[in-house]
Each structure stands twice: as C-alpha cells, then as structure tokens.
Image 1 (spheres, rainbow, N blue to C red):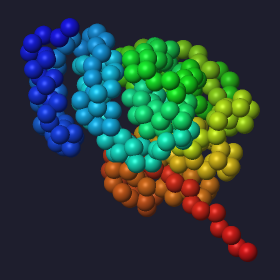
Image 2 (spheres, rainbow, N blue to C red; image 1 turned 90 degrees about the vertical axis):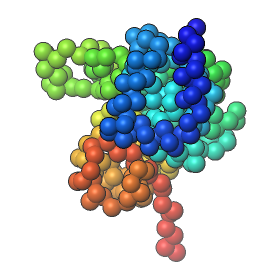
Image 3 (cartoon, rainbow, N blue to C red; image 1 turned 60 degrees about the horizontal axis):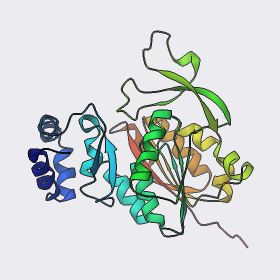
Amino acid sequence: MYSRKEQLLFALIGLIPCRWRNLFYHLPGAGAVLRKFLNRNLPSGDRLTPVKITAGPLKGFRIEIYFRNEKFFWLGTHEPAVQKALTRLTRDGMTVYDVGTYIGFFTLLLSRAVGDSGRVIALEPNPETYRRLNRNLRLNHRENVRTLMLAAADKSGRELFQTAKNEQSPEAHLVTSASVPESDPAPKLEVETVALDDLVFGRGFPRPDLLKIDVEESEVRVLAGMKRILAQCRPIIICETHNPDASRRVTGMLQRHNYSIQDLERNASNPEFFDRGPERRYLLATPRPAVNYI
C-alpha cells in the first residue's frame, strides 16, 4: 500500500516523542517547513488514506485522513491540551457526549477512555463527515458509541448548515439565511437540529457526565439548549470557542450555573483574559459543589 520511502518516513516519525512533535509542529517557521516536507513525501493529499495514529492516547488506533490537511491526526498533535484533559477527566463507565465530532478523533479517544461499561453519544450533522466518523469507528471496532446525524442547538427543528468549501476542513456550522450572502460559494444544506435538553429529557438519552463541544461558532446556542442538563446533571464540559465574544458569553452562561472556568492552554480563569491573545480557546468548565446554608 505504501512505498518503501513512505514506510521509512512513517517509522522515523514514530520515533519522535509526542511532546517534541507538538513543540516543533506548532512553531510558526519550523511547523511550516515540516508540513511542506511531509506534503512532498507522504501519500497524495487528495485521497482518503487509512493510517495508524503514531503518538498520544490514541497511538495505534486507525483513522482515515487526507494527508495534506489532516496529518495532525496521524501525528497525534491535534489539540494536545484537549487530549490531555479528556484523558485525565474521563473514567470507566462514564456517559460522555461528543458534540461536533468532525471525523471522530476525539470520539475514539472518549470511546477508549470510558471503556466497555461506558457510553459515547456522538453528534455530527454534516452527512459526508458523519460517514467518515462511522468508518473510523468501524476501523477500530468501537461498539460503545452511538452516532447521531444531528446539530446541537438552542432548539429542535431544521436549519441551514454551511459546510466548508473544502471537505478536508472541520469549519462547518449552522447559519441563518440572512447571515449568508447569495454570492457565498460554500455549500449549504438543511440539517436536523436538537436541543440537548430535548435529547436527554424528551427522547430518553442517557444523562451526560461530560461533554466535549466543538461546533464552530454555535457553542452559545448549544449551551442555551442544555440549561436543564446544566442545572440537574452537572456534567464536566470542555468547550472550544472561536472569538473573544463567544468566550465571554460561554463563561458568563456557565458561571451563572455555578461552574468554574479554566483556559486549558493558558491555565487562566480570569474572564478578562478573553480580550487578549488568540481567537480560539479551549475552556474547561467544572461544576462547583452545591452550597448548603443550613
């Protein structure tokens, strides 16, 4: 399947510790050089290729990727702070929700972490990405995952969903008709949406112990649709935000439900830091203990 040169490169990459990969791969200059080298020497980026993940908690798991734009899955360098947090916080027997799975990298990690006695509910509305998610689960014989082709939102129904111009990108999200100019070439389709409260308290799905939310700018709407879950189930939440305003709004909503917030990459908990630094953040929300005034 692979040429001798590709097999040698795979073997050499496998010898590099994951920490060194993360440091090198995310250095602006060095990372660009590495990506250019890999693009020139790896299999074509225009076809799906099954590979074994070479580092991190999922080392040895198989995943189908487009090498040109998704090599970070193969390298094990995808969102290392989230990988570390999920590995630390998820335990055998938990029920976890992966809200916005893309092709299932974190779904696989969660499936492994909760064990045979745990359950993963995985939501992904994009039909093509949903098919890839299920293929990757089958590649690894994961039987504790239930996949749903749904978009989590503040209400259940049907809405417009804008996919990425390039199917090798996770940047797809719910949109309103008014927010998308007619000249926008990105594909759009109608998808089914669900409020997570409806899923758990209306449709009988299990109560979550932990949620990972990555919904490309719809995170505020997801939280608005799970107020009863926040009040009654008190799950741990890892939520990716994509701009300072979303970070402030997500933090405010969760603090009003008596959650403490931490930035996983910067170990900061002061909401004022949202006005500085990069747009994308990974927030860890943990429920504070109930206060008994008696």
